[in-house]
Length: 468
Image (cartoon, rainbow, N blue to C red; front, top):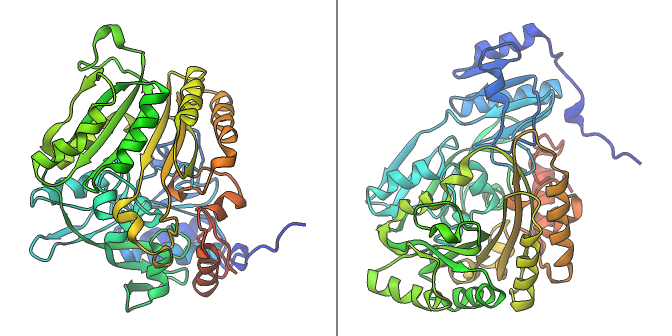
């Protein structure tokens, strides 16, 4: 039986050219519609498999524009897609026939190095904030790619190159400005609207649109980081996970099992060979950082070694190629560990990859991330050991079928070892997978908060937790 449709689907105001024109006039920002020169570019998102055509794209200039847009969606019943950087793996940043609320023009940033705080709007990218904070030897612990918008990565959790030392992005949020489903603009923190503050730290866009974050800044000036390419054998890959788990908290790694690219640092005769590209950052003094990397360097004779002292923002150069838009299929999961048998399975799968750019990504956790109590944030999987993501990229317009089949095969192969999933790495995978992103009572708590603040499920284009 079809579930009862929420009241937000019932139009109060008819969607007419006059309605949309009056709405556009009310904005400080702009509204782009079909037929406008900028419309085709404005509707597109990073994952080219999602080619959707909304009714209107709103480029908000401030929180008031966001509130007006939320109220328009509630009044008209049009589906509301909220977009920060447009990297949603499930295509949640766009809509067929709905409203796209584009936050990319909201780029206000204030950094207070004395108080070690940053006020940042959601149109900024991780790279924007990282470069600005680095002028003071500071950083916000974001993810692994500079072009990702801070709105999505923060509200979903935020796992990157500083996670083991400083925790997730959400562990460094001290306050936020949120537009609710009623169009109210609220400041939330541990004292003010603490339920909303809890929910935006890992619960995605389920309870509101964050229009400003206040982050705690951490020390990350000169680091020991970069990329180390090792031969891809089961022993090396399993040994890497063990070494990364045993490393001091100061070292966080994100590794890619992939064909060696035709880059200047790869010997020509080894281009195309399957390698484990270990990307990582060790914070602290150089001597300690080099010592932290030593066990990983000792796993095998490197194909290439680009690890050394560098400014923290330089780590993003190693993932710059992933910023180009294109089609992507991904399946990911948490596991307690990755042993030699698991590693052999991953390498075998990559030997049968459907596209030239098919990658296994391995992230090892522990450290500061694991020392936060499960109930403290909506992201509750603090005991996760390893994240495994199988990704297959293809040209825009190409058939996604082979890539989807391959990533589904990979997920099925690891089914009995899956312990959960990271919401920011979820595609459109169904209710059970969303629930697996919020264990330890987090799903039920989110549903209760959703009931209080968004009973009509206006904010439903996300990894949606329906109102209790």
